[in-house]
Amino acid sequence: MVDVKELRLSLGVSRAEFADAVGASTALVQSWELGRRQPTGVALKVLALLQRNPKLLTELRRIEG
Image 1 (cartoon, rainbow, N blue to C red):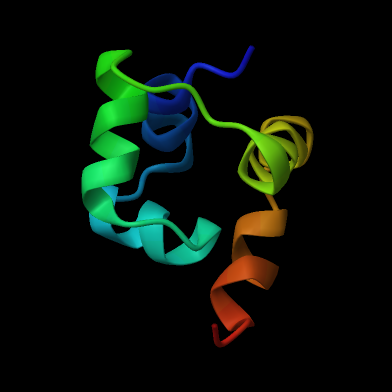
Image 2 (tube, rainbow, N blue to C red; image 1 turned 135 degrees about the horizontal axis):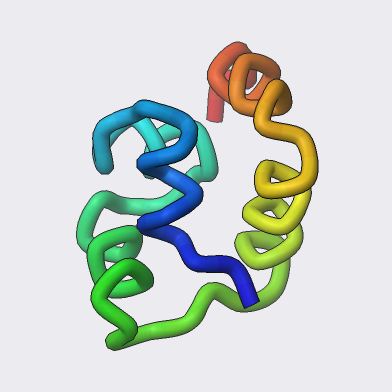
């Protein structure tokens, strides 16, 4: 399982920037970080890819959603 807060902090981005990059709301990212909810589906896959390759953040930021 991906530790969302640890991942976000390792990337050096704010919760809002992280949410925008992964296509989620800041409230949802906060829920993931606090353990209230768990990422699933495509979000979980995107987070796992970011964990393996942090440079993907740059590419995700370029994608308009």
